Amino acid sequence: MPKISERSLYRKIQSVVEESGRGGFTDFESLISKIMKSPPLQFTRYERTKESETQVLPCKEDSVRRAVYLTAELGLIDGSTGKLTKAGTQAMKRDYFDRVMRQQMASTLENRGTSQKVLFDTIQAMLAEGKAHNMPSWDAIYNHLSSDNESLSRNKFHIFLTLLSSSGAIAYIQKRIFLPHHT
Image (cartoon, rainbow, N blue to C red; front, top):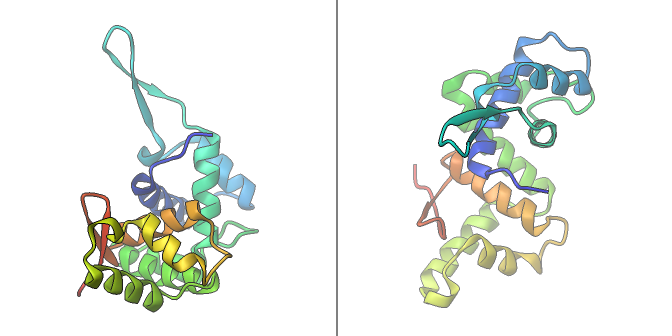
């Protein structure tokens, strides 16, 4: 199954929140159907034809479904109704979306057994070591933390770390080294 980009996933989550806020659906599955019928730009895919023309491809249901399920997992929409939660309502305000995402990511990681403080402390410690073979890539961070936490899969950790970066909670250089973001 092809993976969707975590960076675009961040904007897809934002689109799901916006679509949920607009209403016009009756439950979780009908929210997915609503998005499929009129997909936001973030779900649009393009492909170059043999004639070097660009064509718009139909939105893939698995892409929409993954984004909607992750939006629910982050506590932005209700997992049974698809309606906005209190956090989702706050996230509807564009200037607040990144802040709410940081809060929801911290909460989701905590619920999965990895506190944001432990994550940031691990990154700082790995940076302090300064060994080229042990620079804090997402994979190295996961390996370091995995002995403490078995409830978070490698793939989900990578997605969460990238979403944290997209929200501005952490920064990274050359898509490898994650640094705690100082605000």
